[in-house]
Amino acid sequence: MTDPIATLFIDGQWTASSSGATRTVFCPADQSEVGVVSEATAEDVERAILAARRAFDSRVWADTPAAERGDFLLRVADALQERKAEFARAEALDTGKRLVEAEGDMDDITACFRYFGKIADQTPGRLVDAGDPSVISRVVKEPIGVCGMITPWNFPLLQASWKIAPALAAGNSFVIKPAELTPHTTILILDVLDRLGLPAGVANLVLGDGGVVGAPLSSHPEIDLVSFTGGLVTGRKIAEAAAHGVKKVALELGGKNPNVVFADADYEAALDNALNAGFLDSGLVCSAGTRLIVQDTIAEKFVDELVARAEDIVMGGPLDEKAETGPLVSKEHRDKVTDYVQRGIAAGARLRTGGHWGGPEHEQGFFYAPTVLDQCTAENPAVVEEGFGPVITVETFSTEEEAIAIANDTEYGLAGAVWTSDSGVANRVSRRLRHGTIWINDYHPYLPQAEWGGFKMSGVGRELGPTGLEEYTESKHIYENTEPAVSGWFPRK
Ligand code: NAD
Image (tube, rainbow, N blue to C red; front, side, top):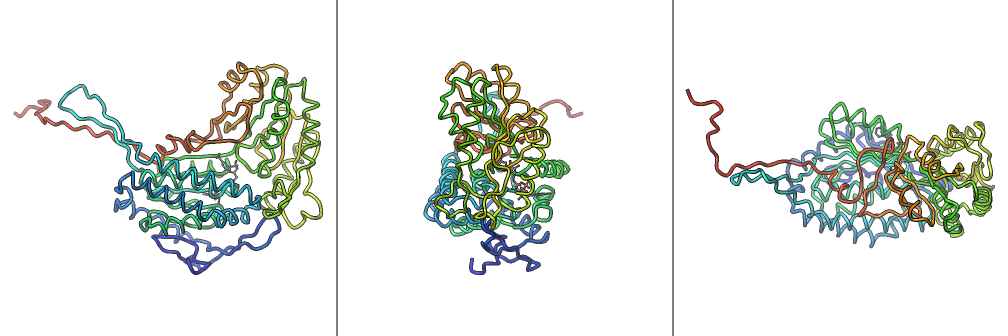
């Protein structure tokens, strides 16, 4: 990769946009220029999809033994650790998140490649008893084909790795489009795949606008599966476009995640993690615990202390060592969060802290102060909608039944937590919450070995875990009669 503007990767070649168009990427913490990248055209996307199709049909990767594909992913993991500083810096500058958080993301990304590297050859299919000793019946797992991947800006490479690693483990080809605001680490990972010798056309990268560059990845006839992580509105469009071609669809969408605190919980841990749940990475986490649902007997004290602690959080740019959280990703996004909070207040929520853009030192960036809204009702738009910012709404409950009802009262179902020292309560509540991940006395950890995804409008399908690999395969039944015989249905006359 010599020319910085040749940042599309199509059919094994770094290439500029066919129109010559470029896009400048800015750091949201101070609007400094991060880099200039190619802006693909519809024609470039067409070339990328056809390259992926040719590579798949050639079987060059699909027929590489699964154990070798796994070894390749382990080498990717090693390369990611070797280049961790470079990747983390690129991620931090694109997103504005703190460098230490981006470094943590790199470890998670490496773990994802290692996990899928290790299980790549663990899908041998199964023998089926056909009830006839002369028949060999087996179900095999095959790669699904050409995968379209569309990713968001909050965890750009992490979300990409949850798709790239299982897709390659299963033997597919792909075309990926990262969010237009945060392309650099996806460019870097394609560089890693290329340097490690992935055959040309197996991995392709297009950059640019969702409507122009992303849309064909859900509608093109040569795409077999589209895997999308992003917002609900875009997810619907993608599902509709894919439905026309009856494509397999995997959607990881938003969340409106309940963090339920019972009065008997470990108070300090619950308080500390309520901050972490809502304000980590400025709340730009699909599973952020933005709905604090706290038992009424402790609510007043708990919320007072949450507010005091939120006011102490230091905002700053990626390389500011004093910073504890970063900015939002863009001006447009901050406008959305500002509007969301104002509508919440207009609907009766009480602003306890935040609701502003920080001090004079934050003026160059798109910061939004950690915000707590209490006295929220179930209908308040701040409780109903995914704000996707550092905003915690507070609701209270008195009984276990009430806590469950409030926590499930959302069209989303991605994640949630329950805090209690009563293991019976923890077990009952965790079983009844209709969300894809439940934490008991913790918030945020996830494991590459465990499935991730949403109930209800939080998505379709699962990433990570064995199911995350299976999403990238088709099942095929092969029925072999080892003793062919005349069936006699239509006798010779
Ligand atoms: P977004 O939906 O605006 O954009 C996501 C991607 O879709 C971008 O690459 C964008 O360019 C592309 N896109 C936009 N319009 C498109 C179209 N018509 N066709 C194809 N692609 C199109 O989402 P965002 O604002 O970048 O990300 C934030 C959202 O992502 C939040 O709702 C968050 O909850 C969600 N998210 C979910 C998870 C999860 O695991 N469930 C993880 C991270 C983020």
